[in-house]
Length: 273
Image 1 (cartoon, rainbow, N blue to C red):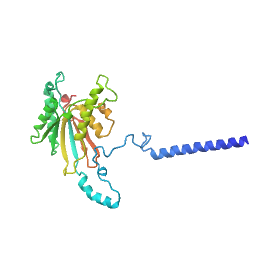
Image 2 (cartoon, rainbow, N blue to C red; image 1 turned 135 degrees about the vertical axis):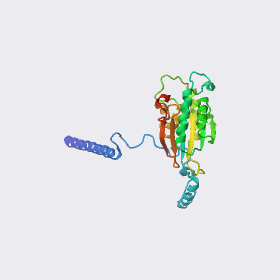
Image 3 (tube, rainbow, N blue to C red; image 1 turned 60 degrees about the vertical axis):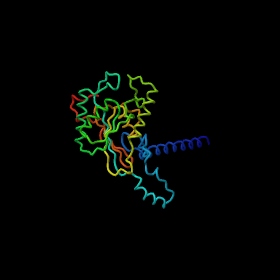
Image 4 (cartoon, rainbow, N blue to C red; image 1 turned 90 degrees about the vertical axis):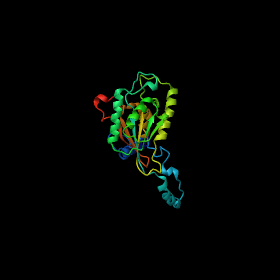
């Protein structure tokens, strides 16, 4: 009797192992998409309504008739144009000066600004406007770029000033930044992101091309936020002075990046930063 009971226990346990292995390998077969991944489920899922302008969140329907009405209304609510944004880091500047007003572009920095202005002109886009940080080095850089587009409207924005958006991970070894500084700068830079990055307005009928002249920390944080990467990863990549970071926001809210820190138009001796 005891032997018979033991055989049943072994049989049940063995069945459990077989079922467990079958379930494990069966699920793995369903979920593994590439040899180097364990699961096809993304670690961070894309938020379609990152800019709070997704159509489905603006119109609610309860039945098929409402849905038909909503589809008609959809054409007046959904944007149809793309927003291209060119983020330009300022040129090389005097880092020995203490006050921002004295941190002016060097001769090399002015040459960098001329070359990025020429590069933007060579792209032959019909630029809509230029937005710039109010820090001296960004203002001077934008002034030089503007010579290539004398009729281009220019806006200044204090939110775009340089700062420390969030504590980087891994941390910077040589920095000693207070939590208060991160809080102050981070909230401002996040406000800049929310102000300047979103899908096109429904009244915009043609694709737009905007130039934003600002700073490395700000641009890197913007890229992380746009791609919905961890924002604390902003210090993991570098940008040359007067490099071009080109992003596009399409009507659906999807984001594309054509370039990050493109500086191929600069000769080797003018690459700094």
